Image (cartoon, rainbow, N blue to C red; front, top):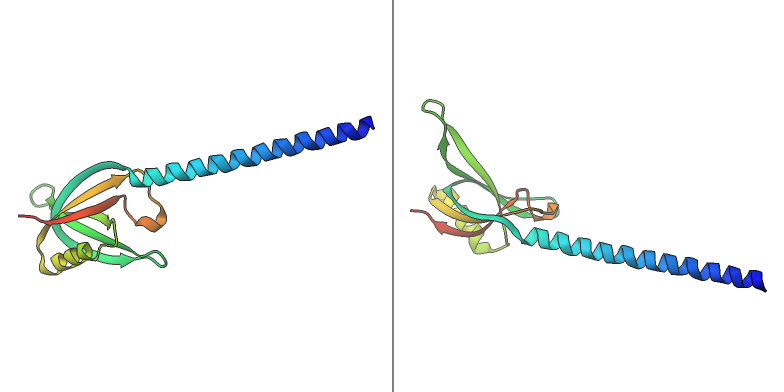
Length: 139
């Protein structure tokens, strides 16, 4: 009888250990997902850039995102000017924002783009870390 009691006690302690281990792994996974989600939503920096949209497209095989490039002007010394292109991702599937960007690209109007730079992004969120949140006409 004593041997069976020891065996049952060992089984119970082993089951308790694995149950606690499983619960700990689940808790860590949930905390990791929560922190990752918060890191994708909290901006690292915010700002504005003005220029002419030189490229705007919808990219992705499965997850389609709106990507673009803004020509913020020439930079360099005289005689050695190079365009300064800034790549961005449109934050939401707002059709009015995409329409403004497409129209400005076709007409060559200057825009002022308000953006957020984020620490972390997942591959389905876009190609860049700069997410445009608002589009205004630039003087």
